[in-house]
Length: 267
Ligand code: ADP
Image (tube, rainbow, N blue to C red; front, side):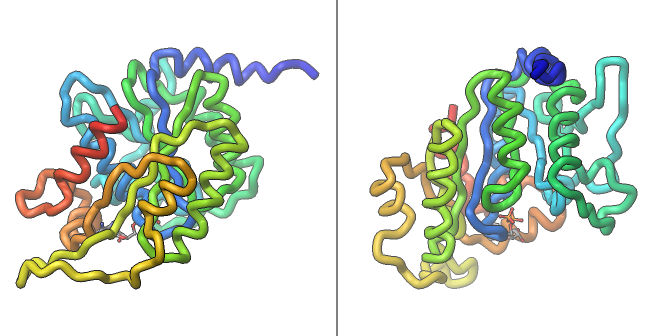
């Protein structure tokens, strides 16, 4: 069988992308897109660090809304599709930029999704990036297999796994870890999202989810994966994401330090 000519084009297009990081979660709604965008914000706080965000959650792209880019459309230039710039050193590409309206639904089967992911890697003019952070759909689906196959053409890709502390979410974390092992993707570590809740009024800390026997730390330890830290459950995160602003810019954000610590461990 003849080699796929697109694979060498992907390799060329990504030659100047140093680190590729997949953000994975077993379940939807655990905050994967929120964590993806805020890791990108945190990494790009260093003005010398160039960061790209690629959203491959094709049927439910939420990155444009979270990063305040709703209504943006992709433009083509001589060197391919231009990503949308949030800052000089932070750019984004999402299937949401291809839809006429954010309310439009994408109902695509595997091969078409595979084709779009290929296009995002082959045709987007990413330029030189220190980090390409990839938001994926929940679980392990066609999109994951496609991105892993294509990115493996362009050097090593690693992964971070996002989970909430509930048992149902933790059960699926083990599946994500096994997926990474199967496809030979090194795991940087697990991020606990919506950990502690500190009441903004009385400042008391409360446990929202019922405590599990070992928690996220325990799962990380038993699966021999690094535990990168815990992001608090903070109503301000929801507010910032809904209005398309970086939570890290808010003076009242409780999770800024957690994000800093986590991004320092990724660097
Ligand atoms: P996923 O990508 O896993 O489906 P999202 O990132 O879309 O999840 O987050 C789901 C919802 O939870 C969003 O409304 C988001 O604003 C909210 N959220 C995420 N993380 C937190 C947090 N740490 N504290 C409070 N709300 C959060």
